[in-house]
Length: 190
Length: 124
Image (cartoon, each protein chain N blue to C red):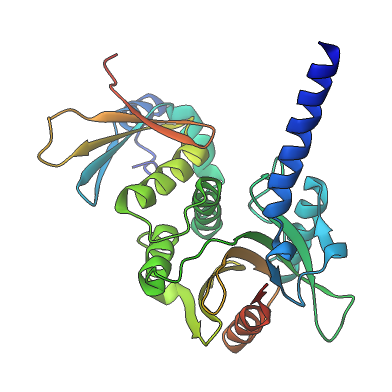
């Protein structure tokens, strides 16, 4: 009986690990901004990073403080590409290998944007889309705060990415577009 | 009203307690009424619309993430994301009810439990 319980417990443990592993972003995509060593696995580190980025741009701590890391998302510190030790972003990301190539991306992205935007005027956002042979993607940035939202559907290969990046971009406008487009163009589905 | 010096604390509390806000979304009428005027007055002191918008946005997103919605969001799914965020942020201060326009003439109370949103009959 003890052996059966042990076997069952180990099976459940490894089943859950396998399930979680399938959702890991770097098993689904590559992106030079996302490095295994920069993954954030404790809530204090995430809040510290987000507070740092917020204070650089607005002063004070970020209004959102996480109580725990949600187990359905993954978190990474994003570093500047030129000044490689400079922290510029806190990435919250969810990926899957789901095939959405038969879904209208424009409708899906618009419905997501509307869900987040609510009745806020469109002028409060910087919005852009990218379409190429590999992906359909869109992003929106709420100008009074530092939140960039990104959504990507795989086109040449199946896949899905939804991400929010709290990013330090002192010169909004072109800086937001440049960063968002570079982040999206870096994303390749495996 | 809360800026007028001739309004006493009792009158102000009475006013806030009976305050209700009504708005429309899709086929529904939402009503917000005050659950706890004192808690609401505390929240008002720290209220910053832009910071609150960031909190509302991120909590709406986390609801969508937790449900793993990946396709086009239905009106109901978008409403639920907003209901979740609103109740997470102000669940101690407000009651939120929802009634289908032209429906059975009964408003249902929206309740949040973790990431679950439920509509319940407020009379039960």
